[in-house]
Length: 357
Ligand code: GLV
Image (cartoon, rainbow, N blue to C red):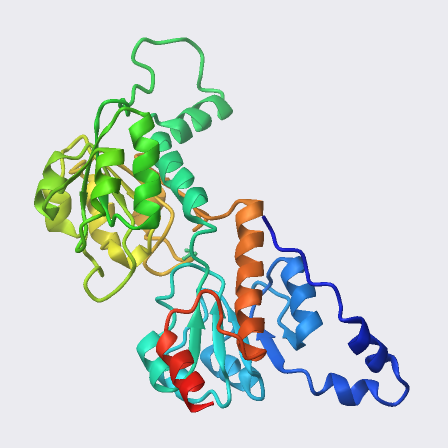
């Protein structure tokens, strides 16, 4: 459910309306920067609670512009292209919270923010099923050659039915290997169970026993996963340990018939190594939604037919993107109003603040 914008506080509205007082009281509201376009409901909600500086564009900001525009603000509603390095964070004065409109937060150096007493929030849960749906969409599109079929029909090449026309791979009863058995990994496994797949997974932390049992999950080593899976789907966060976790060596371990799906973060895969592996048919195909240098895509990937490419849209359903916008706005407002933001990544900052209050 999308939370509806809160009703305006009538007493406060009357005060705002009083002649001569309006500007004064308005300027008392905390100031919030929204770095890029978000859904209008979230903007309406923020306007009720804050003085808004809204960059109503899809362009985003350079580090310098970001730092300059954040000056005097108490909160920033950010997106994944806004990079908060330790240097940028150190240049922000008086900011209480960075509310990211994403579940991933590799664009923000959270330990540095914590040291500086800045809260960081994200948007978990609301996008879990939508993202899992899309990982499965890519898996099926690559396995059953949907995009090739679309181009074939569209370009008028379809002149007769052929017994081996665009034959692809079965999905049902085959083996899905999932790296990362968190919220989204589990949601993908739930879908795979419906396709009677064998599901193997690898994660630094074992999934709860009840989840393993319910979904029939087999924990395996990374190497076993790569060697046995017909489909490999990535659901790990981007961190030092996961950067390039799939490179030339790992791709060579996979079956030549295997398909790789990535809806996590681009740098989890060594993109040039993937492009080369796809070109040389080291693996059969891939479905890729995230890239190492977005929106740049490795030029070889753009030429290949055995890969389905999408522009980082795994969570992009209308409902989910609206909920993500609203959730980030609510996190920002909670922080500026002195409440604990619901989706706080560094509770230490809040606890320290509460202790010293
Ligand atoms: C999107 O990539 C997200 O992290 O929400």
